[in-house]
Length: 393
Image (tube, rainbow, N blue to C red):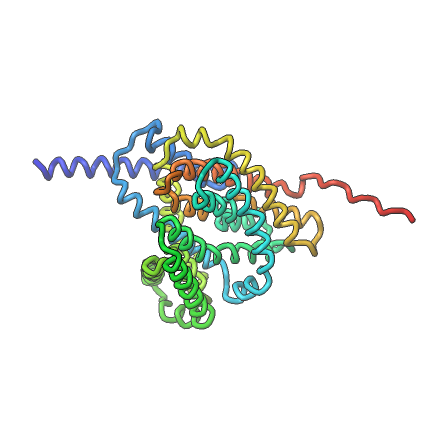
């Protein structure tokens, strides 16, 4: 009798998860038809089926939560695969000042908005992180879909994304330690450990990436996928053990792979990434109250407006040696926020203002992930003010 009841329960869960997967597939096709990223649609689906939504699903949140965590790792793994060791070195050398300007201009709107909303400095700092980091996944897709990988401004955009992604190796441990109320000395030790671990993995990736790739290389696609998937989970888990984001560990695994392994891995891992990444975005908003997200749309729209302006200013400054049209394209390409913004917001769920933070972050990502690609698509049609006439002497 008990076994029969358990079997019925499993059957219901399988039906619900299957229905969700089919629904997300339809949304992905709709997003492709409209020429936008599917991330906002996945977030809306989670809102509709989660707490207080139109549909009440009863599947295991533990299972979906684990799938979502794997989704983050695979997202960052494939992002790391986008960069070669030479591109990484070039980015670290040339984008330092741009990274500093980017951090100042784009962290400030979220942090100030959090303080104006009456939140504590820690929660406000998390919102600063949400507005700071552009979505590497969305932007990479925009550059590819709009055939702009060969544009003059694209190397500067990609170099800035590398700097942002590496900054995330330090930012989450710092904020997590502060949220946990860790003593100053323990926080310093945590941050120092995070920096050393990231530096170590980076050194391994740059110096011995080729050797690692040779070790896991195989003519069998099955063996290669299992090796890369296992290595990603292993490094991610070990990174988490020393208070470095597991997602950053996965990103560095992607950086370490090179040559034919890097090329094959991108193709083989992509379907897995899409499956688990969709689960991640769905599950994040599944835990939110739709009424709270709806009430946050007003502040999110204002924040999106300011954060769009600051990203445009970043791109304009960063590409100062290029023409005005290229500078505008660079800034508008950077507008979209996505995976890292959601990861950062999820750190604050347990904070006193955590629900308000996650609701505002979800609404903000929904808006910027839609308007960012649209603005980037039509960047060449946006009129620029006429240059001031030269003075006649």
